Image 1 (tube, rainbow, N blue to C red):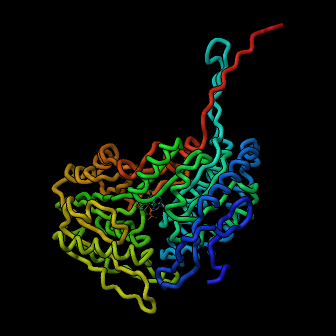
Image 2 (cartoon, helix red, strand yellow):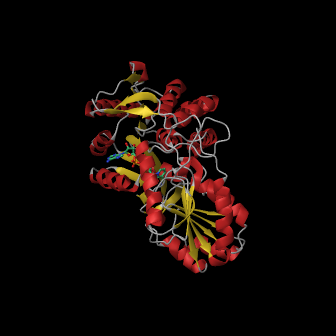
Length: 487
Ligand code: NAD
């Protein structure tokens, strides 16, 4: 593999090869072609990036907000202009379909657009005569260098949850993307370079767990935005906090759909398949446990099985593909292990996706798999499998359905299909999850609303996206003034 195929860091406005002897290949999971090699960054690489970042912060923090948003406006235009090229790159290294990749990038761009509103979003309020002859103003100030550490499943969208808001508020930002699909991020940083941020304000440091752990302990870093699996999110939260940093850490998930007796069964099945199987199930908002009222269980199970069988598995760049490849052989093995656990623990295998074959490609494919008669204590009902596996749980009534959902260790998302306003109202107030949807398969908050889960799905208090981002990336100062007449 030539040097041109090596992934680079972007530090101080220039491209550099990371120095560590460790690294890994970047592979197209659908074709098994090696696309590039990613060398990891060592502590010296990180020290240099953090030093540059803190130097850049000193000017950037005092730059007028109206000037700070100009590179973001340019970045938005560049992302729009290059969306098809970015889409193709994302499909190649991740495995998702073209439509899914394009949709992800659009969601990322919406975060850039939202951050362009920072002159309004960053205002903090004031009160004349807050005390006798005293006017008080709340001032939001940037803090320093933040890092974003992101997962493989949405490399564009999640990086853009953090980067635009961190720098729009006047901080410097270093991104450490997932080592599994870093190429689309590298291309986005070429656009960042074109967008005209001052050198050092936005930087890219590639690496694996050692690079992350060095970040958590680094004195020059003020805060950490993390998204990934629950055990790592917990570790990030605890370690970064122990080292005096702000931290928001989004973890893994296990999400449910409740189907009531008044639901439109065909519509609910269509949205369920889309929710559970999009991105081959590799989504934190994937609703893959369907908790179904007894009276409609058989009808819903039959409809869901029929629609599941209609899904086409294949290479995400090809037309007509609904479900792409799984990110890696290791993860494919994990997903297959969950299917085996469902069989061993006594669930009823209604649709078996294990033997799927895709013409012309020997990639990491598995077909959508549906289990019936799943009980809440089964492994496939409790653990995040991150594959296109669905399980149907039969319940007597709505009370039992809510109980099943709330017994989960996770609380990222849930959806409800019903015609009953009363049940929808109870769902809104009683279900313990951060993103709820009624008569829609996936409750994905828009860029101007915050996005975060509960229980083991989230560690911290301020979520991603929206106004929470402004609160996370700024410190509030109270400024009180009294001007007695000294004439
Ligand atoms: P992951 O936890 O394996 O990796 C995430 C990041 O952590 C990567 O950048 C990786 O380099 C780093 N990392 C991995 N192991 C580490 C270690 N031991 N020490 C320090 N850093 C380490 O997650 P993933 O497999 O890339 O992504 C999938 C997970 O992310 C799923 O659990 C999914 O639910 C979750 N996710 C959550 C949300 C959300 O909003 N809650 C959104 C997307 C993905």
